[in-house]
Image (cartoon, rainbow, N blue to C red; front, side, top):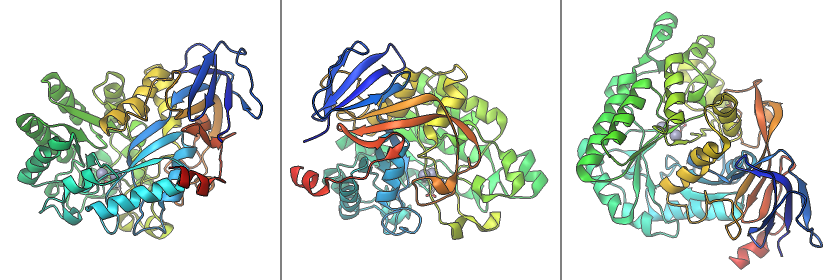
Length: 445
Ligand SMILES: NC(=O)N[C@@H](CC(=O)O)C(=O)O
Ligand SMILES: [Zn+2]
Ligand SMILES: [Zn+2]
């Protein structure tokens, strides 16, 4: 038996207040505020002035299992995801072994089900071992119980144009998408940060914007040529926004994501030589930050994806040059979007639902369950947010197993009060709810 929840006075998509009743895994009833009855045993959640969103969907998460369980596991990463308001994540393929076979993607998918925090949708590698020279068994991964629809060599760029072309052609058969990590490898050899004034002044090898833009330009043309769909991972430069805008104007089937960190942080932070700010693609300039915000506001950039990239202390607490690229993001994403886009008036909460739930669910083809309208009969995958709350980020206090947040010590707006996965609370009163029903739910499925 699942608990019934009465969300008293919530504002679906930031609109008019309502009572929203969750029962039997679905949205059971939506009434005027204060009007919903409370059945025996139901839990009433004070949701006055809280925004109710469809559960967030991350198209770009690194869960590190198998292989780097010292940095994150499927269980710890998905617990962090629930704490951040997510109900589904797409787990990137750059694990060890690489998720390039039906066996590995099925393993990750099963670990996600066992953990039960969010729905885990494995991303399949495009090439064997991310090696960039042979296509992986894309069809077998698509046909596996994990039903893979997103394919990516993320961490590496699918550089060979003939392989990229074949991948784009191949995934059409099962309505898949290739998610490209756009990084021209020759132009970025040894690169440590954005190429520009700051890299020149502090003497770190630079990574030019054109290394990203050249690949995006090539790939949108390839996608047009073969009539396939393309997704651009973690777009980070003003020029990339222009290329995607041009491609969409031409009718090319391309979607693009921006990370929370590229919406707010700049390469000025590298002056600290703090590897917390070392990430791929690198933090760019203030002009790029403004361009990606404008691109997200006008719909050129379709979604926000976290690129949650946990790393151990050994891999991060060292000198800049030796440190790993990447930052955690699941537990700060919504707050950063609120601060940069909602509180500044550039997006409404309905837009936030679109860029963090509805559209990522559609791109990843998980939209039968996730990113649904908040309406009676729909699956109760929901996130309740208190936008008036403020909190100071403490890396050590987060649910992720790694502490490499770039936002340590930042005061951010908004707090995830509750997350519901098929009507079950994974987060309540802002804290993850440990499952007591594992055996029962496992059997029921
Ligand atoms: N973003 C990063 O800096 N690192 C990612 C890889 C990637 O997303 O390219 C990682 O796996 O650590
Ligand atoms: Zn990447
Ligand atoms: Zn990534």
